[in-house]
Length: 65
Image (tube, rainbow, N blue to C red; front, side, top):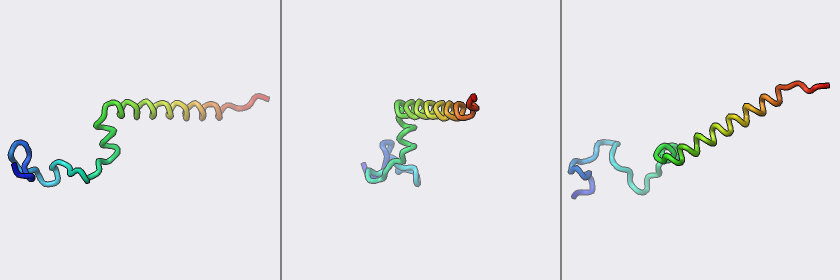
């Protein structure tokens, strides 16, 4: 099989062929490709959101006195 052909025997489409080993995969694509990394990203996002929301809520309370 020729290097320019896919498993189906057809040449890859323009720009849509398999990535070469020296081509780096962008980090957002790596996150979306892995279920566990996506779950971890969601947990971190919601944790930080609630912490920031709580700090804003605490700082908005007037001091008694």
